[in-house]
Image (tube, rainbow, N blue to C red; front, side, top):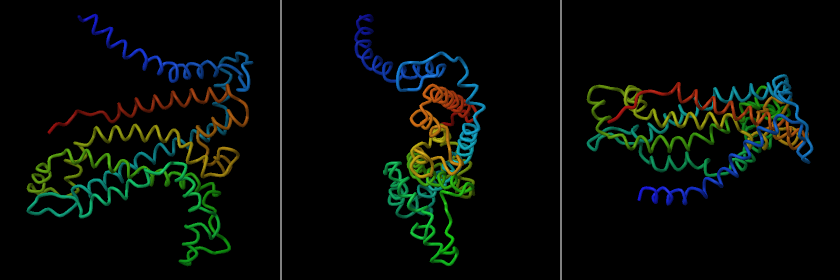
Amino acid sequence: MHKGKNRFVAGFLIGPVGLYAVFMIWPYIQTFGYSFTDWRGQSQEMSFVGLDNYVALFGDTVFLQALYNNALILVFLPIATILLALFFAFMVNVGGRGGGIGIQGVRGSSVYKVLYFLPHVLSVVILAILWRAVYRGDVEGLINGSLVKLGISDENNPVEWLNEPNLVLWCVVFVLLWWGVGFYLVLFSAAMQSIPKEIYEAALLDGASRTQSFFKVTLPLLWDTVQTAWVYLAILSMDCFAVISVMTPGNSFGGGPDHESEVMATYLMRNFLSFGKAGYACALGVVILVLTLILSVVTLRISRRERIEY
């Protein structure tokens, strides 16, 4: 009977596992193999070059600049997104006045959730196109036009937001932040709604302020959700391909000006499709994969703590 059950389960699993192996695992294996060759991507002619691609990669100034930009995004984006999403979620769910019906959210909280989540409904490419229009370097752009109307900026000398080396990366990060906060607000709101309101009421009766309630009650009980959000945002920080390739200036896949907004994903695609250096691009892909795996493991280890039950 037990063997029959195992065969029945195996019969259902063999198809999905086989498809996953063919379309997911095998491409990873191929990429790893190609990274040791000088493959150009247009034919199967290639030569084994060993670790030459990896040695060249870590001596490539453009790659190092892209790695630095990814690190900046990694430091800023997860922290800012989680802090803002936690604050808004806390205010929406338990930030209203306490009364006879106990702790409650702000008035119209369901409307706020929809408004905050709305940017996440749109495609990332559509958002990038919209924000590229907002950041236009003439008075027709929303930001420059508003600054001129307010008398803050000169009409004849508008700010080139996406062509300023010191501004372009932060313009991209702001778009990612604006896009992501709503999703994590809804995620944290769902987690907060599972926390019994009696816990908040008991904290307020004991004299705890809203700030103390957040740090002593809400954050510890939401830690598992925050940990998950941190991992996803860290992985997003290692990508950013769609937003940067659409928004920023540069050849084929953005990254300009002068590689100031270059990230590893855009540099990979440029090497693969524009420069014909497929083997080099595969080595870059392997590095991105390894860094992402290490980052995920380290993030989970650092943020791990004892589970709090209620």
